[in-house]
Amino acid sequence: IFDKFKEPSLAYLDSAATTQKPQQVIDAITNFYSSEYSNIHRGAYRLSSNATDNYEAVRFKVKDLINSESHKNIIFTRGATEAINLVANSFENYFEEGDVILISTLEHHSNIVPWQLLAERKKLKIKFIDIDENAELILSDYEKKLQKFQPKLVAITYISNAFGTITPIKDIINKAHRSNAVVLVDIAQAVAHKKIDVQEMGVDFAVFSGHKLYGPTGVGVLYAKKQHLDLMQPFMGGGDMISYVGKEGSQWAEIPAKFEAGTPPIAEVIGLGAAIDFVNNIGFENIREVETNLIKDGLSFLSEYKEVTIYGPKDLSNRGSVISFNFSGVHPHDLATIADSFNVQIRAGFHCAMPALHAINLSATARISFGVYSLKQDLIQLGQALNKARSLFHP
Ligand code: PLP
Image 1 (cartoon, helix red, strand yellow):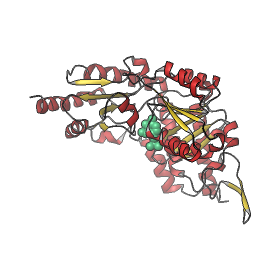
Image 2: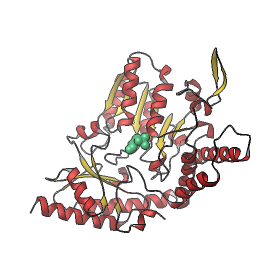
Image 3: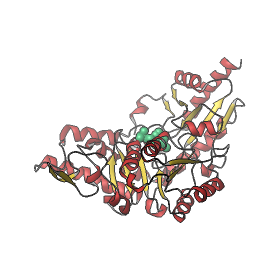
Image 4: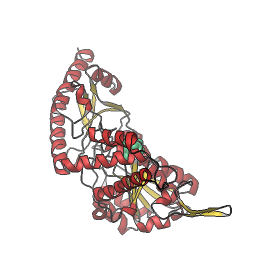
């Protein structure tokens, strides 16, 4: 399905950073640019109205993908990062000086820094939920901090990109709501691997990026409950997000257009639609089965190396398609370079999650992560690299 297999010896083990693209996604984008291209929401001509229909149809696909109550709760952004920044800006009137935002220590920087910027602007306080040595949330700490700080917002990931931890999201959301906090869940690492149901979760905001879901870069999604969208100010001003512009001031377009200023990433949204068809055709049960087998294989294969320390949850049901590890005496960057010389692509570093790594006394790890196209053969190839590292560093 994937062009990457034109280079059959390539073992791509960095799907948590971004996924390879199925041919149908590439074809949808190519087809749009080569024979259906136009701007949307403006032209009264066929090309433009077709492009508008194709773009808007994807909003319905996203609605179904995450079981949103309506397509009007779906805002297209440039990615998960922009979606969080959108909330941190447009929802700012909800906060008053001294309010607390509670974040987990597991978060990707994109779910920390926008809140820090907001906290500076509005004089808010940020508190963190602690994690244990297996990179799992300490729920008693969460409960304690909910009670002690009465946060207005809880921002938390569903699956950690650094350690693969799956957080008990339903419980977290319920507890936050009982304490009158709204919850933003980062589903960037979950949406390609698990069926998401925002209504069942009861979540207030959810964000993800298309490129981790077999779609293109440059497109992401914000889901928000209507009651919050109604309160929110526009994020950016410009074309498409207004119903009227006069010299004296402007009026906003209806939601969701109010939050989509300017020419949007049209081809990318259409590519995202093809990516959603791709995962739906495979089915989330099949995806989870393929990936769970790979995680099991990966964990047992890595633990055969006495030099390897594996991080993250011990219980497989609490682990997404990510394995973070270190090889004693070899810096993760060196390990990634050795792996590359065997045509194995692995991630090394702090994975945009410095507080999470620091909390368990790490500064970097090597990370492998799987997509639905990953193969056991990829692990065997990684084994060649680990054997090489052993012979170089532990002769
Ligand atoms: N959240 C998580 C858990 C991630 O893994 C990432 C990307 O690695 C992001 C957010 C940010 O995604 P993007 O850079 O596509 O906006």
